[in-house]
Length: 475
Image (cartoon, rainbow, N blue to C red):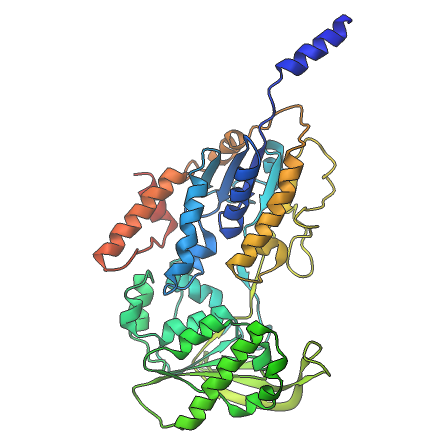
């Protein structure tokens, strides 16, 4: 054996295996589920969850309705993930502002983007920016304590409001506003929202959908909750259900059960008849209507001009919605737009598709530098990669699938140099600010919120400003 071969063998035998370093951008459901899978399946991995807010959990914290505490139980699972010795949480770190994507790739073997969908979709119709027209995303953030929405101007002084869209978020908003205030007081709804909702004069809420009952996006659980609300009556329009009973038997099970519940409620409504009652609130779903213009009086919303629609197509799957030439006007003083969320590119290196998602192949982001061994590989999971679809279980499945692909890639790392990870990123971030909230800091915020909630007879009272979060975290 010559001297060169001997040196090579000594170097190979004495080398320490590279510890895979992964950065996950976004500490919501997708980020935590991915971290859960990676920590279980890759030995000696180091995972850093980076979150722009000082607090974790994303839409679990800020999107789930206050009266759905059981949905938030998944936080217990995520907490166990964060307490894993190979997992770290770093809050108050913003991609595109505090650190660039290229910098992350220089110091990590893999970067998983799952920062979700931060903006709402617009209708693109006349007067959409007028007073009292609010995105449902902002309204949900307002009553859930999202810092950006804390000071949202919400006027509930009118009798009638309309929600444009028929998904679960739309039903959540309707249910919160139609629920007895004494029930809301027991939840973690923010105090500022509770005060305004307690003085609400809203007596009827229209839920407007452009298609028919067979195409609604909400699920049976959410509808059933609304139908059971105290002092609230649901009123359907019988003409919207023409021909539905004849084809309900051909529907798939989930859609069939949901449609049967609507038909049952309509039948009970017809049997009882309608007598106006000042003590009741009313939930009024209407179908086959699309907003074409917001009507304004004294710079405030006074109503909505609606296009009447019809479905065309031979089969249920092929049917699409088209205007029938007729229009209606609906009087209302508040409108919430609930037609979906969209993701935004927070770094100039990101390439988005026309669908508002990052271009990817099964979670792998394809870019011009993917051949470089010096830069960590890019992945995407959650709504940023799939679009804002599905519930938490759907997000979990997607995150696990992407994490599985990452596991296979990380097991064959051939980097000659170990990556610096957050030790290097910290240097970059602290040049701009030094307030990075770790898991210990979050635990202090968590304890403080629970203590404040106990004083009000609630499970928690959320801190609604980033400044106060930081003050509590660094006490």
